[in-house]
Amino acid sequence: MPSPLPHSQQPDDAQALLLAEGDLLSRRLAQGLHAPLDRQDRITLYGRSLVFNLVNAMLPTVEQITWRMEKPLSAHISSDLRGRATVQTVSFDGELWHNLPVDDLVESALFVRGRLHPMIQEHLLGALYGSEHAAGRALVACLKSRPVLDATQAYLKALLRK
Image 1 (cartoon, rainbow, N blue to C red):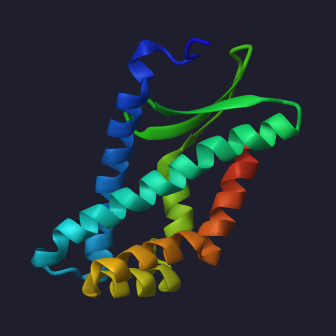
Image 2: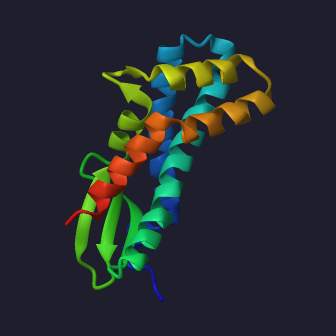
């Protein structure tokens, strides 16, 4: 089956959009964690990893849930008018359901009133100064934390609402 996406929104564009969101998150993490310059590469990796994992877990989840609801939707990464990444849900007959910004998901999952959630901050600080193995565990702990799971659930509900 051919992709329902226009040619301009194929997977390479989606990756570029997610990389840009990850880089924006990295800058915020560097400020929030007061990361030294020699740790900037790690911070960039953490920002990109968190965005990619949050969004790439969301897409198949939306599709699986809607198949079970017998209202199948396709979920894609698209760009909005600002050129920022959004998760777009479309029915198989081409009807647009929702277009929700990725930065909203990141903001609600990782931040509280504009500051890093204390639990997320604790995990990321441990990752910043620990070994690579500790960093991997810390990123997984962030993604499995209660604030991230709650935000993901709210985002899923918004995507599935019509």
